[in-house]
Image 1: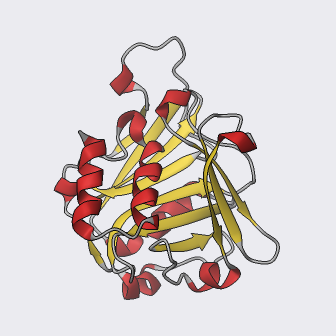
Image 2 (image 1 turned 135 degrees about the vertical axis):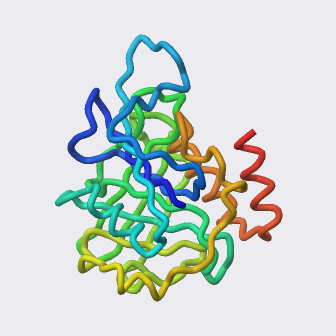
Length: 224
């Protein structure tokens, strides 16, 4: 079973989400709209909401993510724990409007600027603060036109998709189902205020091209 979590600013779950997180969760419970800040108790300002969808069909995950963004431009990233991109770890979606997006509270994680370029390439930059100034940048990823168009496995063990793609169908996605991490390895990731911060964990693992066992150890460390 997979959980597809979409997070929104404000007090409603409408418009374009500022992030989508997909992870395996055997105990997934669907929620139409709920507070993203529940794990933090009372706050002076509660400006984050979320929806949670559940699916047992790996092949429809991209379709669900695409639908969440509607007609807005977006960039999707499927992360894996092997260099051939056959073992699925997590997936993330970002609005690709070149604007700084993220949670209202800076303690909740990273901020992202995703862009789709006119030449068919894309970029994703992650920042430590909501102003997304250059000196606050944590990491940056460039996706070539070919990598984005063919969804090929990149050097950081990812496959990339965007709103420029033809709308995928469940049938077309079945050719790239792959295997997945156990729900135990990913339990708790993407929940509560962790959502965006987990990008940091998995991305660092991928870019260092660590062996599977070390990757799982790193994830377990951040979950504890």
